[in-house]
Length: 278
Ligand SMILES: O=C(O)c1cc(=O)[nH]c(=O)n1[C@@H]1O[C@H](COP(=O)(O)O)[C@@H](O)[C@H]1O
Image (cartoon, rainbow, N blue to C red):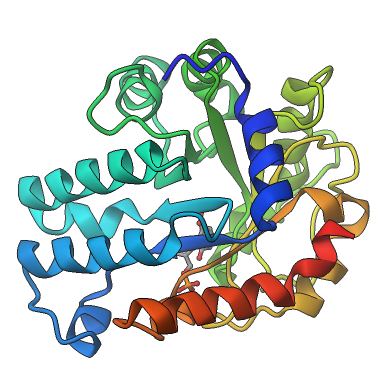
């Protein structure tokens, strides 16, 4: 990639053009069936091609869920490679939802896989888990900075089980989710329009960490199928409203396989979140 522009700047420009919505490419076996596609690499490929046709030029960011491709082994990963590169060649930013996290040296390999220039899976940004300690993400933070890539750090996730870890209290009295947001904020300090280190905050939560000082994008999944709404996004974002990237997968994908119907569903979601641009 080695983009001369930072991911934050590229995302800011893309949301200015297309609105803030991120659409997920989550090929659940149930969706393949509902779309009349076989539960196979061929079905996965057709699903992905339909998504590419429907989403390119319609949204700021597309987020393939890596797990659904991995489930088909090397054939699935080959489909993911093609999907990512076709989206990027068409000018659509790609966030690989891989939720990687490991000790530093292994994290380095994950970073090269998802953000390395010329890697077969090279994406614009990747989701990462800081729950081996935020510092374990350093190799990814360094590579993202060097190559103009982005990270989305899990802070407060949309699943109810996340609270056990994320709402626990650190030695200094802050919640762990707040520690992760503050660490990301420190990496975004001094960035021009928007930093490249985002956080993930579920739209299903009753309370969000304080996001006011983040100066980076806030990915909010959990909308639609998991119960989160546009009002929840407004309530949780606080002063960070303009940096929110709401993310929907099944809410849009259930409209397929018609490209027109998918684009209409995208249009409805873009419209529902137009207030983020005001
Ligand atoms: O990182 C994510 O995108 C993510 C974080 C989170 O806290 N909750 C969450 O649902 N996600 C992902 O967002 C997508 C949600 O899908 P839908 O519930 O179908 O919109 C899935 O790919 C999840 O893995």
